[in-house]
Image (tube, rainbow, N blue to C red):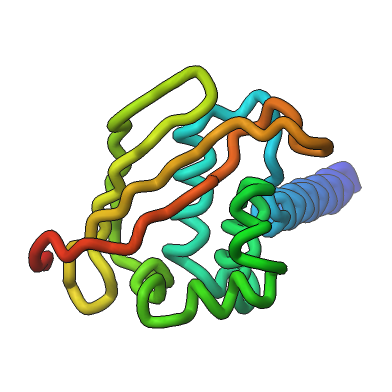
Length: 165
């Protein structure tokens, strides 16, 4: 009788552990699908990295998630020029900036800095293997709800820098 109870208890504990692991995995996956938003604790490099990683897998976890993530970190001055999200998405999908979507790889190097802005050089290999160079500028925002948050204020047109893999 004790042997039967021990097996039952073992199976029950095993099932509970599997269910707990599945619930943890689901909650972690859900956390990764939420848009990250500007926060004063984020560094300038964090903003650029977040945007590029999202654009690299634009349609994960949903169509144009990468574009929406990039928009979330667009500086208010930048938004005034590019327009609302739908217009911003059209701009990113247009030929000039389309290579950012689903690119193969990128590197980010700080180039210039002042107290309220940082310029990065982004080298990126697009889906066709072209290596492109961008100037990516982030600066601190001063208007609510983004006060003291680093956000992207400008991205240059790409410059062809060579052929990748």
